[in-house]
Image 1 (tube, rainbow, N blue to C red):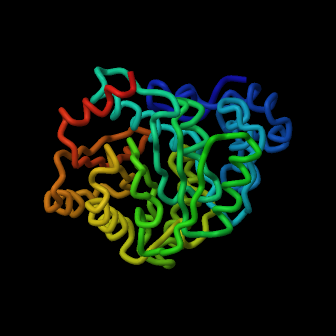
Image 2 (cartoon, rainbow, N blue to C red):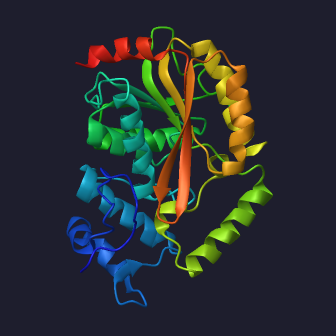
Length: 310
């Protein structure tokens, strides 16, 4: 079977040559029941079938990330693995820029995933790729419980914390003695339940046109898909709250789904007493994704912090 799937992913992304279905079926035999032929005669799955997508994720995590068990309820967000791990690789590049072009690896690198969800996808892939130590947080108690079970079953050194206040992001999660080299987040980008429903309708339309599955979300609880004010309000709150933890994170980062959101967010960053910010583009198929990163440390100080890696 020829590999099919994503293109233009990060050069270190294991999936930049697409899906190798023979390898995936060998890792997760139940995937074979969901294989379909495309009009071009290649193997694929029906990405409108949530069970097929979840089984594909299970196969990808087994075959590429040594995750022997991964399962989430059907109503939780089932993320496309290739696009998610791209964020991890670009974050590694971000750290390398302050570390003589060397990517720091190992458990001494501390990473905080805000809104990790039941799927725990960033800690699962990032701990495998770079052996970083992850802490994940979420406001949903059920998702925290499932994420903890996944981490424990796979014997991963991943901490999962419940955020009791939905209006807060770092408060109660970052303790006085904590220091994180990176924070990451995939925020809910819809502004309302109605917007989320419209987004779902567009998703099915795109699937019908054969859009690459690296760029789509599947299912998702309300807190995973939308919040009042959408991603602009969410990330603005993150920027404002990060000031109180300025000395406890080398880089704060967040995905930004909509390019139109950037102008407002950049204005907010310029109001904050930060030393530097960056907009980092990530090409995924025909879609350009991106994340913003900001630091309260100047480059010289960041380099001093990174020297502890070596």
